[in-house]
Each structure stands twice: as C-alpha cells, then as structure tokens.
Length: 404
Image (cartoon, helix red, strand yellow):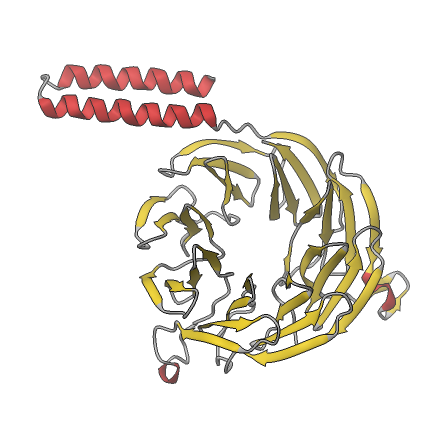
C-alpha cells in the first residue's frame, strides 16, 4: 500500500508539472495520456501481483563444502526438500519447518582416516523420478537412492565425469558425460543401454556440459563443440544435427563454442544458445534455423511467453520468441552476481547471490520491489520455487524458506 501511495503522489506531481509546461498543445495532451496509461498498467500489475517475501524459517543444514565445480541444486517432492553436497552428504528436509527427515553419507565407504573420508565428488542432481533420487559425480558415477530413506539402490560407472543433471523419460535415464558422450541407462538398475558420441572434442572449452532436453522420443543435446543434435531415446541414433559455431572448426582453436545451457523446446521450436553468442531458434523436426541472433548469454535462460536471460555483463534482457528481437533490457544488475531469473505471477524474481531478492514487471523490466535478508553474510548458490514458497541454499549450508 505504501508503494501504491508513493506512485500515486509521483503521478500527481508529474501530471501537474506537465500541465504547467505544456501550453495545452496536442503533443503534451498525448504525452499525458501515455503517462496515465502506463501508470494504470503498472498499478494494475502491482495490485494483482503483489510480492512480499516473508521469511518462514532458516536453518543450517550442511557443513560448508568446497564446491570448486558443482551443478548440485535443491530438489522437491511431496513436502520434502532434497539437498546434497560435493563430499557425499545427502539430506531430506521437511519444507514446513526445516527439520531433517533422513541423512546419509555416501563417502563412508570410501577410504577414511579417523572421521575424514575421501569426498564422493558429487557434481549434479539430485533428480527425482518416482521413488528414486539420482546423483552424478566427477568420478564418473551415477548413484540412485531410495528417496524415502536414503538407502542406496544402485551405483553405475559411466563413461566419464557427470557435470550436468540426468534427464529421465520412459524408464531411460540419459547422461551427458564430459567428453561429448551421451549414454542411456535403465533407471531401475543402472544398466547401460547405449552409448554414442556427440562429435569431436574442442581443443579449448569451458568445464561443464549442457543438460539434455527430452521431448517425447527425442533427446536434444548441445555439446562443447557447438553442435546441437536430436537423437532417439531408445538407442541414441541420430535424427539431425546442426553446427552453431560462428567460425569453422579449422580456424577456431581459440574460439569457445560450448553449448552449456539447456535447450528449451516450445511450440515445436528448439531455443539454444552457445557461449560464442549464437542464440538460435531451430525447427524441432529437422534442425533448420528459424532465426539467429548474437547475444552473449552468461548462463541458463528461461522462457515464458518471452525469453529472459542475463548477458555476460549481467544486463537482463527480454526477447520476442518469434523473431529474437529485444523487447526490453534492465541495467540494474550489471556487475552483480545473480541466479537465473524465476517466473512468478507475471513477475520476474531475481536473486542477488549476496542476499537480496528483487521482483520486476515482466512486461517492461521495471523493478517493482526488493527485500534484503537480514544479517546476511554468505553466498546464495541455488534457489527453488515451489508454488508460493521460495527456497534459497547458501554456500555455508544454510536454507532459507520464504513465503511470497
């Protein structure tokens, strides 16, 4: 309400100023009408989509872990949050109060001296499917746990490091390994069903791999060599592939062509971005390019009516999905450390990793409000939105649960 009153006072002041200076010409009247229209639009958005993050609980769940590289994140199912760290600690948390339901240490079977055990080097997941919880490791292993009690169901060694989340469809668990290798496993027992190569390795690439996207029986995967491909789910055979490199490989020894962001599929179109700045919309059926733009994207992007992402300078951009043109941009977060935007009720929620939550008008990028976490001296590593609840995980192992 305070925000609405301030906006109303500001609107009256602007209207009065324009009236005094306009000499009542047609252009000024038109400007006033435009201001009134924009004001009403913003006010309606604020009224209908008010966000007021309220901290419900916070609790230290994990010990601080040395995550030099990690795609570990929070997962959720039926009132329970699942969290893991690189060392091999996996915990199940009650979302209502932050209490630990179960706790396992996967490193206990490793070589140990007194209370210290060699790290399990977990690097991706957890991913939930039915009653199983799946994790990947830098040691080239996939581990399946029972999500009701944390007991290990099976463990399988795959081709190499697992640096992105597994994806699951029709009892097949698909892994994108670090050496441009794609593998399909039986999700129930870990048996390897098929293994295919996504093409030659680049001489230089960033650490990390693109999480595949499954659409019916198609697996869409971006690789470190700048090639995106569509393959069949049952055996990994190639349907089509498209080279998105800007410079031919023969001359690109210092050109990073990695596709590390997960492709997104919407209305028969595959949206994909590579580190070299190539943002493409491709026909899902054959890989033909629908549009191509140059935007230096810093990480994952989201799609909800439009495309939203941060560029390498952390400028927030909104793109039209049909042409790839910029709708609006927001400079507020330049040089800040942020997490991939979150869509919520016609707002974009932006998490500053140093303890601040922003919410923006999704139609024009204007900042509507923000909230700082009190006495915060940490670094936010991942976030999870569950209905109207926002969960934040920090580097020091603390979970915060906000109600929006």
